[in-house]
Image 1 (spheres, helix red, strand yellow):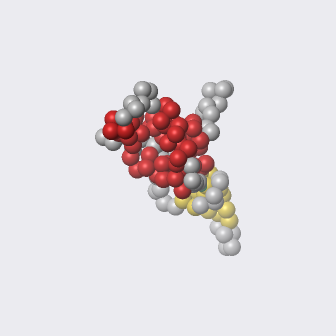
Image 2 (cartoon, rainbow, N blue to C red; image 1 turned 135 degrees about the horizontal axis):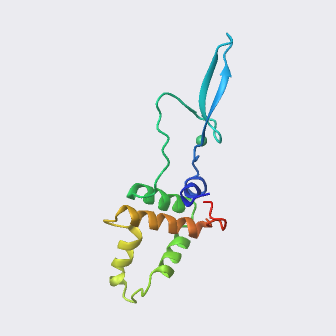
Image 3 (tube, rainbow, N blue to C red; image 1 turned 180 degrees about the horizontal axis):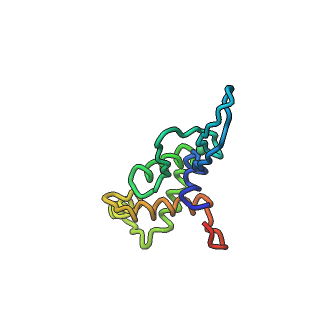
Length: 133
Ligand SMILES: [Zn+2]
């Protein structure tokens, strides 16, 4: 499981859709195909574009932080983030750089991605040792 799939399923509690085309028969004996998700059975019709979250933008990061908060774990995550931050100054007024960092203000896609992956690791995601992620 990739960390993106982990965040989607375990933190955001959404389906990481995997589409399978199945062949069915209607009541008149007509054969037709249907694209459905293997996990949630949602049907995809027409020229749909199956897209998973990329976690490379502020919305995805914000949704991840919000989900952690909804689960009542924000304080725990915040402590973890503080531990990760090197040389946290003792003066509270110098903590601006810390909040800039974890909130990823003015971040680039790779910054959002790094922050999101960090939350996945904190939450329990582990890279599989066989390299198949
Ligand atoms: Zn699904």
